[in-house]
Image (cartoon, rainbow, N blue to C red; front, side, top):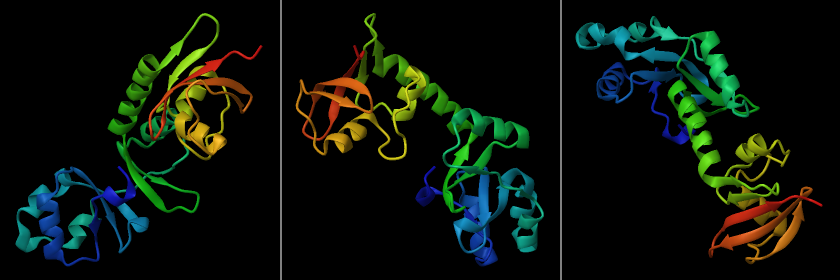
Amino acid sequence: TPRNEIVGINIEDPTEEIIQQLKNSPHTRIPVYKESIDRVIGFLHLRTIMTQLFNSENFTKQDITNNLITPVFIPETTPLHKQIQSFKVDKMRIGLAVDEYGDVQGLVSMDDLLQGIVGEIMTEEADVKTYADGSYLIDGSVTIRELNRITHWNLPTEGPKTINGLIIEFMETIPQEGTNLIMHDQHLEIISRNKHAITQVKFLPIK
């Protein structure tokens, strides 16, 4: 879940507002923070406070803070399998992705990670075709990270996320169909494109 879509509880808000947020929340695990989402103090599992929540006249913020689970912070560049391993070690199903400065960039759940792995496998099967001559026919939307994993190449991952983006950055334009080029030690041919993007590209073995 991207940062701007995270739904959390600001513990500094009035108690009445917090009660309404909790009662109306579609989520069972909710980040709790002080003033800013960059200051998360823990995760709250709604199940742990249901009794107090529906006995609102006796509900206090301490009911929340007493039931908080220590948050797991995961660097946003951490590979999927290491994120899953981190969750298993901490016995958690949810955590926060942070950048190099420690600022929260998003919410990560075990379900998201497992779907990500399934998605990568499906992408590998559907969008990357391997041929006997060692060439690859690749959908422009395939991520560079996925392609590196499939082919064991080392294309740069610091900038654009997709093959389409990498080629456009390299060429500084959307190349025409049939264009051949050498990019990051790889020989490729543009197979198809539309007005806005490269839709298919063939990576050819370097002879």
